[in-house]
Length: 255
Image 1 (cartoon, helix red, strand yellow):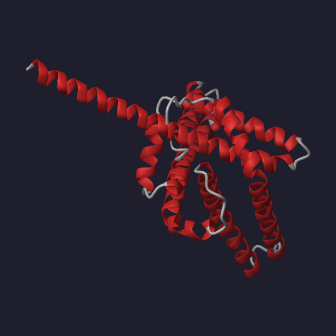
Image 2 (cartoon, rainbow, N blue to C red):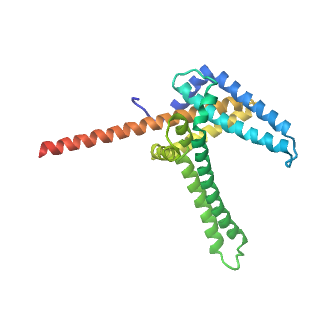
Image 3 (spheres, helix red, strand yellow):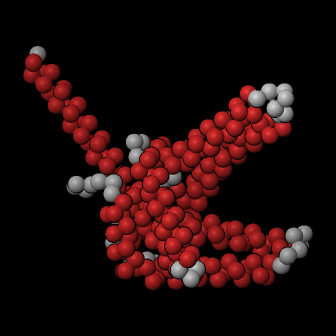
């Protein structure tokens, strides 16, 4: 890709172009998923000890998980100029185990950092000021620091799931690629995600139904952001290679 830049306006503009072409299809698909999920919720009942409740919620969880993978793959295919095909929801299961390992790993990081933050906050709340003013302050500082650290980690690995759907890479390789391509773009990604959040808030305010359109558009925006970051990373790596080769050639010529 030539003249690639991380531009929010470009991402929103391109996502809107894709929405005009495939937005109705994708929104309809998302609505169908919501209807099926609602149906499963209704037939599951409210008795948490019943087999019907357990089975219904298990099916709902599997449906939600599979739909998330398939929907993400459809977005990638549309960006590649392909027509959305429902067969994606069958073929995508070949990546299910890798995708599951990624989600387990991310959940583990959240749980560990969350547990440490909870312990720090508990100390801060329960320590009487008469005993020490420093311990509560330290607890709140640890809580704030861990919250910032978690947000930073989540931003750096936020494209790992898309990478798994887009490539044949394993869990660790996808995390590593996401970590590499987001380096130096943390603040721009924060602004992008805040813009996406605002977009969805506006969707909710638009008689609620508008949120389905903004959710699909948000998927296009984040996927375009991934493709832009990957293109920028490859462009930078190619430039480094060229510079390295030139330096090597100059060294040999000097000798």
